Structure formats: structure tokens, C-alpha cells
Image (cartoon, rainbow, N blue to C red):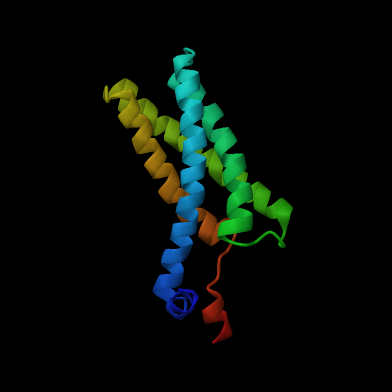
Amino acid sequence: MKKLFDKLMQYRLFRELYLIFKYGIVGIINTCITTGIFFLLSHLGFKYLVYTIIGYTVGICISFLLNRKYTFKKDNENTPRQIILFFTISASLLALVQLIQYLLIDVFYLKEWLGVGIGMVFYTGTGFIMNRNIVFKYKDKKEEQI
């Protein structure tokens, strides 16, 4: 199995898919925690604008640590720069998601769970692209060797 994996890792497409897979695993962990916070706080009577901010804030912290160490393997680089960029991008995305959710739920009267879900999908996809290309500046190691 290891030989097959090593052989597949010779292909850039597979390396990209593997990176997305690892980001997805971190995302699943993060989503479970964030969604758990959403459900808990919503059942305690908090409004969606409050529980999503709290949930995403906890998720952002977990996501930074796991993506830095596990997904992009950039834990030996400029930590202050990464923290500033990661949290700036995450906060900007969170503000944009809040606006999207507000429009979908309060203006267009979409079901709350659907509006929050659409916001989560937007946040995750955009977050991957920005983290990969800006915060952690992932470079394909095989291409660097050429």
C-alpha cells in the first residue's frame, strides 16, 4: 500500500488532491466542533449571529493549529506573520459569511439551517484557497526540485 501511495505522490494532481483531502479532514474535525457549538448555543436561546461568531472563533483557532502543523506543514516558519494573515482572512470571511447569512435568512427568508449551511460551504472553500496561497504559501515540493 505504501508503494502505491508513493507512486501516486509522483503526480501533481494526486498531491493536490491529497492536500485537499487533508484540509477536508481538518475541516471535518473543525466542522463537528463548530456545529456542536452552533447547536448547543442555539438550543440555549442564542441568536444565529451570536452563535456563529462564537462557533467560528473557536473553529478558527483549531483550524489554524491543525492546518499549520498537519495540512500545510508550515510550523517552522514565520509564526507571527501566519497568525496575523490567518486571523485577518478568517475574520474577513466570517464578516462576509455573517452578511450572506443575514441576507439569506432575514431578507430572503431561507430556512436558518440552510442559510448557515451555505455560509459554511462558502467559508470553507474560500478559506482553503486563501490559506493555501497566502497564509501558508504552499509550494509543491516535487516542482521545487525540478
